[in-house]
Image (cartoon, rainbow, N blue to C red; front, side, top):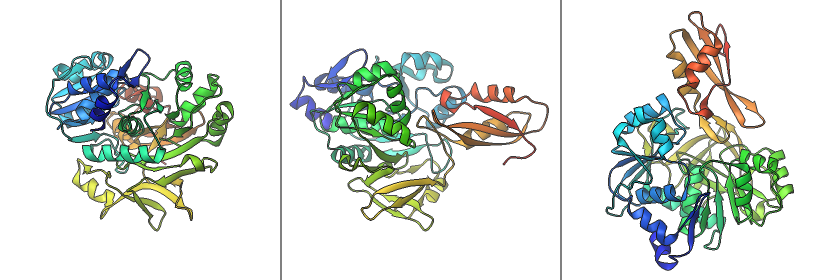
Amino acid sequence: MSLEFWASARPTAEAVVDEEGRLTYGELAALASRYRRPGRYIYAARNSARSIGALLGMLTSRSTVALVDPLTVSEDLRAQVEDFSPHMVVADREFLERNREVVGDAGRPVEEPIGEGERGLGEVVMYYAGIAGRTMQVVHRGEAVWRCAEALAAAMGLGRDDTVLVTPPATHVLGLVTILAAIHVGARVATMARFNPARAVAMAEDATVIVGVPTMYAELVKAGVGRLKARFAVSGGAYLPPDVQGGFEEATGVRIVQLYGLTEALVVSFQPPELADLRGTVGLPLPWVEVRLAGDGELLVRSPWNMAGYSDPEDTEKAFDGEWLRTGDVMAVDDRGLLYFRGVKKRMIKYKGYPIFPRDLEDLLRGHPSVADAKVVGEPDPEVGEVPVAYVVPRGPVRPEELMEYVNSRVAFYKKLRKVHLVDRTP
């Protein structure tokens, strides 16, 4: 594994830096080894030097690791824990204390390792089944995740002298693959547990590459970011508004390039920095990735790191056309092979880069005794991308505020309904 190589070759070089401290490659490898034991583990921690070390240990062992957003709460979390049946939940103390009723005795904070064991590669599970449009296991082979990181590192031109500021959480594709890409080449990862604009501005000053979602770049500009030395910045996870891109580039002198990915296919494409002047493209397919467009413009992808499948075989079958993954995203391609996002076929809302499945919220609403039917849609919002709004057909007296409280007390902050409309029939 690349971690062990760099721990041997450059043991005193800084590997991961956060708000509270830093770990060298030697220290990171030693910490990772203490979390390397076969089993079924849920990982639900915010980004930090220590949590990344723990995750690397689990990702280099013969384990099955489910990556669960640490903001997941209540019924969302309970459903994932019951579905995955972990031997252990490795998470922040804050997460474990907040969710003690759900996690029970299976919880262990990052500071308490699960023990040393055999090295190897197992499986990685995520719960954002975007093509299927519901919360469900998306299973990846561990080897495939690392291979995607290797390809992205090559496409980005990363090297051991880089400092890569990664603000998205490691429990999501953008954060996970860019962190692993940096580790693969022996670079320095800078990250933070909670996004703080002022802190992010300070950390960006030392970065040679910056990775974030569009809202992060808007927040950096609001926080007064100045000229930066970064070679380029990377935006992913959601639509990048031209005014956000222009504002950041004008303030910092750093060009933003885009990448495209999804849970089922990890990272698919990256915009080369030498083509940063081109607006709107999500780049070229990564090495080892093949793409083609269906008759209706839907992007199909064949790559070594396409998901192994969903936990539901029927949904897995629907997601593939032979070896080609149906992404549910509509694209255009120019004569240079550059991809341009044109829309979606799948039902998904993007809030600050977080995926929200309307079907999950609709199922929650239909569980209320006064709801006959419900439909949730994304309403455009210039600050965050989209917000979820519900149209509800009531079966009895009920107030919109009551339904919002019913749903919002059971889901993570980014999934919360912003409006509820009572209607005679859903749109």
